[in-house]
View 1 (tube, rainbow, N blue to C red):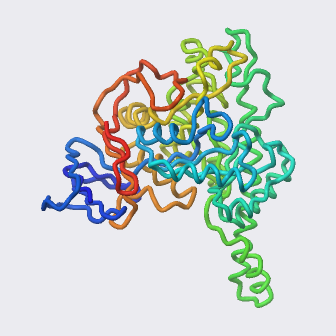
View 2 (view 1 turned 60 degrees about the vertical axis):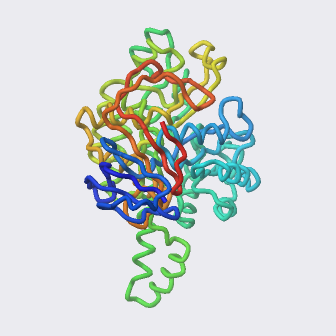
Length: 453
């Protein structure tokens, strides 16, 4: 049993915050309120001056395991997550071998169970991430796949995308999409604009992202309308329609998000999502801390450490991302934690791999760039980093309520610290040396302390 005293308890589900104590027992939140320390607790945490909130949930991480464990593995990735306040993560499928089969999926899940946090895994949409033949999504879902994605590689076959969305609706799991049309890109990882021209590189234009986001928003709207029509048919007073609709709705019974647009970076793509949501599309969208914090100017200062897919874009794009976080167009913050070795990132700009790590700096960047600057309240930030990601994957977490899982982050929202070292195997971050506000003091998962500063 753990008693957390004197904290600023934030519940993103109800958008509330209050001074209160929290008692944890048998992996659950037993009580929230004024609680006396009667000496019966195994541990008493004084959270004076700290925020007590649901453990963070990251729906987009790369732990490189199996196959690329010199960059990261499931255990070091989980350690980095715990240090960053995360209690649940969803691993992407682009490992070696790809998570396109039950055996590899089970390996990731079983290794994840050996860590102190909840490590889930998405499976691939297509075999070998080749975009041609769909995986056995039913078998993979039955084996524990949290969702499906070919992240890192866009799906270019429109009919395959449509079929996958329909099946996702049937299975009631999300599909996550990496949106970059390779036909429009010459040098990925760098935005096509003034900075790329200065570097003598063509780069990746925003149109590469915009075109696929617009397409997938359209398909998601079509599928959402089809699912809604099926539901209405099942509820129709007409016997024949009701029986026909009921037969279909047995398969298409899911009510959650069908499609998730990953790591948004472009203002036009944001507008496509905004309009699709307004028309009833069952979609969600995520943004990374680096995309709402930096612009392509960072490439001039940090070189390959500021290279990622999609790339950092302009200040106008960055401001559009922040506005979309404020108005709910972008539902969640996900790190796209992408470890690489120093040798890989030391290559020339056009040859080095794209991606940066982010689990250990994400919360502080949210506090520093969004809360401290008045864009989001703390409850709103916690919704973006815990409740909404949990809802995407139909998880029972992300809430501060009696009976909820005892997955909790306790952090000092005013403490300043300088980014210096990581628990990740890798250190490929443009934020090294930067002073941020907001530091994790304790991470609790399943009622057990898994990280303490």
